[in-house]
Length: 431
Image (cartoon, rainbow, N blue to C red; front, side, top):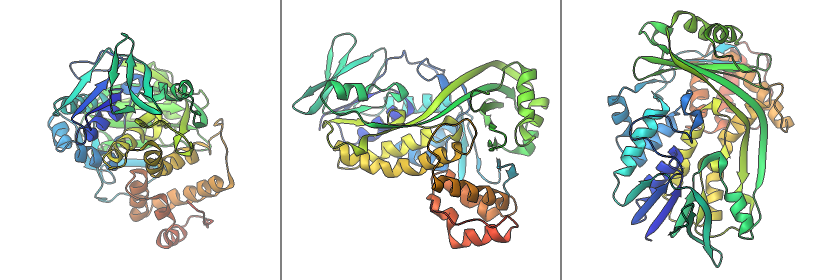
């Protein structure tokens, strides 16, 4: 195999290139943006100015694809810490119990993370990262994609094309042009509006914790997160569903924090020194394209990242899932439908976590099944018990960090702990 093209120099696209370079003599990443030469925000990643979570599994896989990446980021100021002993998790209004979990988190800005990945990938043998090259169409011959057409009018042939172009992916449209059925689309409308401010960070703030997460509840569909970043900064992002996000002036921003299900974030904002300019963002929906359910699909074309499944960003799943999808490109079988069926196993658990969590909130539009109702009822009791049981808190972290499958929260041992810790009796549910 000679040449693979990746559309999009996103984290999903760059990690895909890191995997493909082990199999192809040449890999070309093409992006419509002018890519920054330093660590900076770029137009195509509007959400980059807000807090980004890198889950433990995502960091682990990134280090597999680009050995030494974590150490390089830490050398540039990123912070590492145990995700249970150095982080404060507040779910259903309950602060989870502390202990050493063995799960190591990395707190880093999107710009530093993407910039370092881009530097590493650009230096790989046979890999080129090209900017200012919008893709207009696919080249195809006899049921096989054989390259892309560029806005300049130039064709770029390839043995494999991977679409990592994000939420604006044109693959469904291109499939129609080539005479194929478009994939079914699952959509959960959230109308999530959020705002972000940065603050100077002092060592004693949050008692030395590196992460604070206050999750929304059914009664208060608002949440927030504070992450320690390189450069002695806090990045604080707060969000509200059904269009009820925070205003950006500091006084109103702090007032929004005061309405969250726990006071911790408001306490931080009222003592920390604000820096930089605030910014806002809007995510209308979580969207998943069901390519694995198609009966026909052109050879030589794959889809990854937000182009196949765009999560509610408040859960911090996207980058880590993209890393797992990139790792799946190492499999010898890159026929499209088998590939899509393999990564369905990667997508199902985080998708169920996000959709199930959001559908308990007022104003979210989607199918609230009896199964989701039962799971949410159980998790409310689970979080109450996890406030007193560090093992339950660790179990939840392992699931939310994609290390374990959701059924581990329903093991006989976990059920017994939930009952024993004073929570109302929980109904068993299939997760």
